Length: 437
Ligand code: ARG
Image (tube, rainbow, N blue to C red; front, side, top):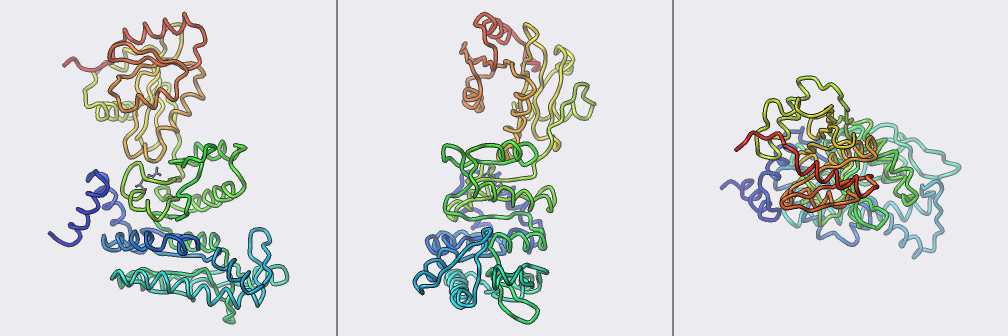
């Protein structure tokens, strides 16, 4: 077995499914080598999770994937400054950098940078420390912020040369003025500038929390900006730090190709995030529109038919769609998620089919289609088999559920008991449109 195949083997043993891992390995390997990923590492990770971090990066390197790494050192700098008795101040989220702050920050950045490079090299992974020459800056506003840089140009030479020689580039977020004065750059801003210049396929933020958190403190698996952004920004529980992060990510992705994505995860979950559909962390994508088609064209119908047949592993009759009463489809732009609606008992909308490919589920596309369906239809009903893996999820979405044999009938927004009973009776009596076996 070649070395790479053996590593893939190890990966599969860790993750369970070979198909998913192979698919992502192929996807990541086909992008231009220096454009696989930018990984931004907060100072806290370097301090507390160096072992997990280097193990995850080493793993990627052995698969032939070389991420461009950029790190901060915020928490380390806070404690070094307080040890040195130097007052620090943040203005608009930026650290005001006096000469005395810089005299502590600069050597500290170098030390942290080398700690990561050394840790990688001690695992036999080539890494290259790039402390200067990438971010060309002017003073942001010397009066107010001191030695803080505003990035004017990102020079990729050193990064590309590291990657093409097989070494992981490890960058600090220090820049220089044209005269060679070292300037401090906020790590998120440095990441954004690097990402815009490099245009990587993935942008990865490693944080100790391992993702964006919802109201209950649970990790939000996926954010689809097209469908979720505005609603999320309106939520009272989205606190200021997360609001800022979402804004920055939104702005970052708007300037990247449609298939680029951002993952926020922890060092320990990075491999799982990258090589499985469901991931482990928060995946943010630009997302895609969900189009409602009342008179679907032939092409969309074929897409939906294939999606349904593939997902359920059965064939639909040719007249399946035409037999539905007032059918309508909701179809995502890439054709990987769809819902088919028709009119049922009491004129209520009946959800005839709901399908999402596994990969699109991991991107949150199923939830996006579901949102469009429920926003459009305040009341609806549908049925699902006990054995359908989506059934547990339907229980969470529905207002009422009624088990009968192999089926569960669900409703949303059907208030009266008699009405719900009519929905149950109608749903149970329905034909699915499958070719008889
Ligand atoms: N492995 C894929 C990627 O990295 C999908 C990850 C899905 N992650 C998630 N948190 N939903 O692009």
